[in-house]
Image 1: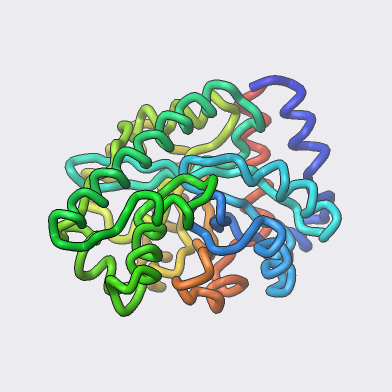
Image 2 (image 1 turned 90 degrees about the vertical axis):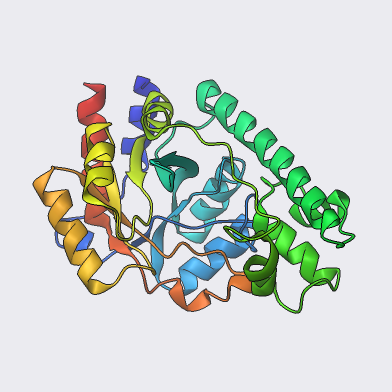
Length: 297
């Protein structure tokens, strides 16, 4: 990681006393319309500010395009933006999502990988549409792309296209009946191994985290830790208090970092109440910055 980026981290750090780090609310998992979120970066930041979030990470799927726009607007709005991304992986036939934080803006290496993943997302969307056509649903790829626009196309865009085309009665019916896992039009994403994803993130100056792990088998969790993950998303809307307690113990036992957030998407997800409800404090971000400083030494 370059010294200029280390300087960027320190320059953008909130200079707070130790007691304040446990009062500033931080949401480290959110999405804009550059992937499968509903809101523009500006709209997302305004909503986060309304909910008392002072530090926000935008973690769009396979896409860093929102970061510069969000960072500039965040400065004016008083919300610090931490650059992030979410990458899909799998291990032992189980899909794993990986969050990358503090990935270096404009890093050519990670952009090369993300471009590849976005291209694979488009190919997957084409295959799903073909399967839907074989099921008698006359959806066109262009209908999906009009909704996705310039973002990384995904199943939420297909679900919205099915709803708007009158092929389903709800957004969720599209998943439950056609494109959800094990449904007739489902298509698996192209994944990289967790170790490769960790390396992509680390090589671009960032830190890697297991996103919303839920209840992971012990052998898979251990393999991910052994592969070099930096931390775990402990706080998430899908995590019960027992799961949160379990992962806090794992983080402590293995000297990992802790993250958390709302995984906010907006729109048809109807998850507005999660924003401002699921968060960590600034102390978690300061621990990340300290790890980055040690890594660069």
